[in-house]
View 1 (cartoon, rainbow, N blue to C red):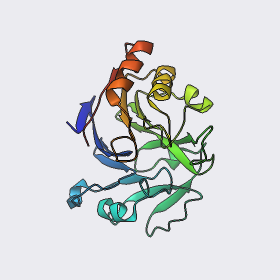
View 2 (cartoon, helix red, strand yellow):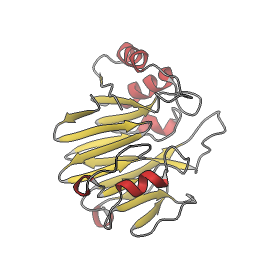
View 3 (cartoon, rainbow, N blue to C red):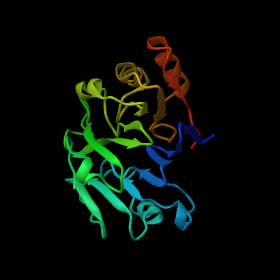
Length: 219
């Protein structure tokens, strides 16, 4: 299966770090990449969240497929890609809530970076916490297990497990245990240059906290 329903929210993994979240009449795309056929109009994005400008997260071709005339797009402040229409540049620490909420959705912008790798220095990208249907959904972006992750409060965590550019299975399992969400879904694996085993990740999570439900989706 490539999607799951959790308490009124449908979560679909699009492959790599791409997701479609649906709930409360909203469709929220995160980092769509190589999504194949263009969605029909009523499946396109109300909100589009981009974590950073690397090609497999900020793909102009896929962005064109999911955007419509009134889609609101959030991009990191130093992203070089230019957008037409309603695009907002954000930085870690931003809280888009109350008077700043977007289309009734509360969004927090959180750090995402590497600790000992050159690929994602701090400030290049971000992660997001999206509040939808009363649940907090954390998308970690391309991040290692940083100190800030230990402060994340989320009901659902979408965590990279690929290693090389992000956390590996062991580090992501430690991150999951620190956050202690009800549900965790692995991402950022399955491509030719990223080898990771979601079943190993699942076993590691359960060895640290058996109460966390690990859902492995097919892209």
